[in-house]
Image (cartoon, rainbow, N blue to C red; front, side):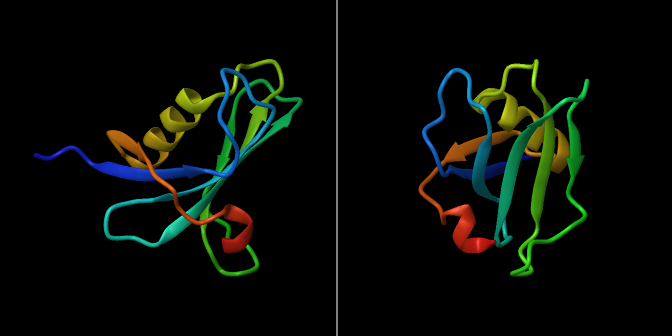
Length: 100
């Protein structure tokens, strides 16, 4: 069985530690979706992929603990867990604010 590969595009440069994340991702055979991570005073990440933005575009909204490290590896790990993706390929995709 082939590994499932997804495409991901970050709106901002991803450093070793970032305060938030905005970007887009695409699963095989699907349209671009939005991913947003924002910091909250919580103990564990909370993922919501049931909603949609005003434009109708879907995606993943994650409330992320302020005390935990947030970077590209963490984002891709959570996306992989939520969508069953084995590998993420970074590409230049649409800006998340345009899709929202």
